[in-house]
Structures are given as C-alpha cells and as structure tokens.
Amino acid sequence: MMSDKKRLITGIKPTGDIHVGNYFGMMKPLLEFQDSHETFVFVADFHALNQVQNREEMSRLSLEIAKAYLAIGLDPEKVTLFRQSDVPEHAELTWIFNTITPMATLELAHAYKDALAKGKPANVGLFDYPILMSADILLYDSSFVPVGSDQRQHVEIAREVARDFNRIFGETFVEPKEIINDSVATVPGTDGRKMSKSYDNVIGLFDSEEETKKKAMSIVTDSRGADEPKDPDTCNVFALHKLFSESSLPDLEKRYRDGTISYKESKEILAQNINNYLAPIRERKRALDSDEASILAILEKGVARARKIAQEKMNIAREKCGFSRI
Ligand code: ADP
Ligand code: TRP
Image (cartoon, rainbow, N blue to C red):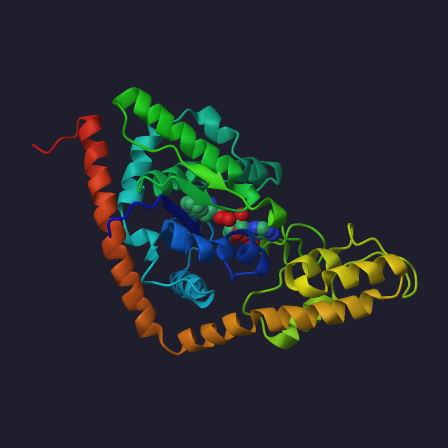
C-alpha cells in the first residue's frame, strides 16, 4: 500500500475493557485520520503482558480490542490493523534501543515512577515499556502518534531514542510527534478523577444501557439542591455532557447557572444521551461478536502489511549496527 500520506500509528493495551475515556482520548480521532493519513493501529499485547499473565484472558482481551477498533467505524480497507506480537521485530528493535538508552531516561518515566511511589513491584518489562513503545512507533517511520495526554512523555522518549540512534549509527529513524486533542485530553470518570480502568470509575464503551444508567447516576457531585445555581465548569456530570450532549449544551449550561436543573435530572439526561450516542457502536460490536472469523481474517491481512514494513526497516537497522548478513 504505497501512499503519499503521512504515516500515523497508535496502539491500545489489551488490559481491560474499553471505556469512553479511551474512545474520546484516542479512538475517535482515528476516524478522521484514516482518510487523511496512512493509519496503523495495533493491539499492544506485548505491553499488556506486564499486567495480563493468563493465556485465556490475553487472547479474549486482544480480540476485544480488535473488535472495538472495528466497532467504532475503522475501515480495514483503509487502516492496517494488527496484533503487536505477530510482528516480532518490535521486540528485536527494543533490544537495540535498550543498548543506547540511559537508565536515567527510564527512571524518569511516569509508569515506572508511579509503580515505585505506590510501593508496587516493578518488573523489567514495566521499566522498559517506553522503549518498546519507541520501537512500535519508529519501526514504521510514523510521523504522528495520536494518544491521550498521559502518553506525551512516552512519545517524547521515542523522539529521543530516534535522535540518539541517528546520531550514533547514521540517519535511520523518523522523529515522531504526538497528537493530543486538548479539548478531551482527560475524560473524567464517575468519581471525578481521570477515567481509568485502574480506578474502577469507568463508563464502558460496550456497557449495557442499564449499566450505563447506573454508572451515570453514581457520578460524584457536590450537594447543591435542585433549585440552587450550579457550576458547569466544575461539575463532573457536565464534563461528560460536553462530550455526549453537544446539541443541548447551551440549554443545559443555562439551567445549571439558573438553578433550574437538579443533579439527578442532569444525570438522567446524560445517561440517555450516552446510550443514544453509543447505540450504533454497540450494535456493530454485537454483529462482530457473532463473526469472529472475519476479525481474524482482518488481523491476518493487517499483519502481512505491517510485517513487510517492519522487516524492511529492521533490515536497515541491523545493517547500521553491523549485523549484516554473512
Ligand atoms: P487506562 O487508564 O484505563 O488504563 P489506557 O492507559 O489503556 O487506559 O489508555 C489507552 C489510551 O486511551 C491512551 O492513549 C490513553 O491516553 C487514552 N485514555 C485513557 N484514559 C483516558 C481518559 N480518561 N481521557 C482521555 N484519554 C484517555
Ligand atoms: N502505551 C500506550 C498506552 O498505554 C499504548 C501503546 C503502546 C502505544 N505502544 C504504542 C500508543 C505506540 C501509541 C503508539 O496507552
């Protein structure tokens, strides 16, 4: 697939079910990118192995991520969709990058720092995570990487790795740039913190309508009464209205400020709007659930395309390091 378009890549770890934070933070923008860029999306299962060390769980979650990408409307004819572990060059390039990356760079990376701060045991895989992510990106000469704001530092590290390799071995890798949609940089969860599966505060992209309603009703607010004026700028419910209630936003804002809406009513409207908004995506997901053979075929086609590019790039990198074929 030759193209003049700039190349773009992103991945999601199969470590849990997809939530609306993932959707707005990094999945939805892909719908436009698939037309404007040569787009690569992958299931980051090597990354997930740091957390998911169970065969059935890994393969179920990986398939779920592939389905999620398709359910949101990515077109497998336009996008190269593949599973990271099907392209072993990601791991090979990681090793080469390990040898040129200072420990100090990785000691500053936030996933590792967070684990240390929480007293959690950190394995070598977690420590090395930004280097594997650098390999994911640089292997494909990707100019752009759409991610949520928490991934900014990792793309900066990828740029540094590209620069270091190019300086040491000669010009080889493209320096990538992150694309972060600031208006939805952090989608809040039901408790007001960043929506994240690690906080158990998520609204799942594929939750049932009932689950969605239950979660919307549990969103944390202050204790202002039904007829008191409320502040849309600090309200967790309103933050989600901004994403799901676009057409009625001015009206909702007015009612907040005037004190003519209760939090209960606001949450009910939100639940309804979330369910309406996600209905077509959930419908497509149900169709994919009953046709797994076609997803496997899409992944196979995707990996054939991805692997060809990765192998060519890897041959160049090997050659630069002096690993020429004898
Ligand atoms: P989680 O925090 O639930 O573990 P991941 O780390 O797997 O989510 O995130 C996958 C992608 O979705 C990343 O690009 C991340 O930046 C983005 N993302 C995750 N949560 C949010 C959020 N609350 N708001 C915006 N983007 C998010
Ligand atoms: N680290 C990313 C996350 O936690 C997932 C990821 C792995 C990724 N490799 C990538 C994202 C390459 C973009 C490009 O969300």
